[in-house]
Length: 229
Image 1: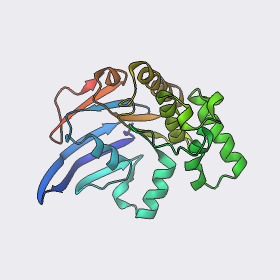
Image 2: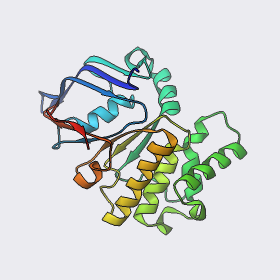
Image 3: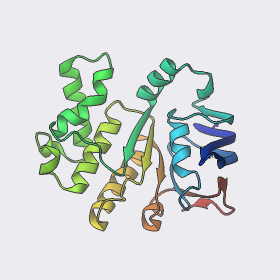
Image 4: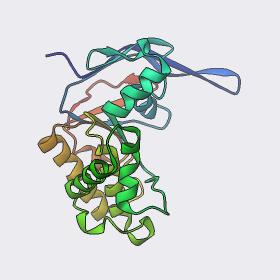
């Protein structure tokens, strides 16, 4: 079966102080549907760049990125934005919740870009909060929630449109161990029970060990021995 995510000979170069900085250098990476993959490596090794490329937020200088057989490089900016809204959910280290909105209203935000009516949007947002175990907190604003609860609201927002892929950039980086474990339990369940494909960047070995596979990078290349967690 063809992998869901394929990076083929991907090269990405940025300019830093006028000098080229090679972040990814001919990278090949394949991720199957329903996999939970953790990416580890020192700062600057290309982890977050891979998330941005897979999510269509960035484009490679060379090589191809295919998701579900779709070549992201062949899509126009408008097509890419539509594709991203349908297929990808993002979870960040900082929860990026709007403080003036309730949990339900924050989760509903990405649904405003869909053709759903107000009642259907609310129902889908409620369902996403139920999945993350926060049905009893939907009327609370972020300042009334713990850090772990805020991240679970952020995950509910990411899954509200039912994307196939979740891209998580240090999702437990601002959490204590107990809250981090609750978030990782949730990610495991989303993968196992809901079939989400999860690509997670982390510096935390304990978090990475919860994934089905660990991919290690250094200087824009895969480190030998990347494999099952």
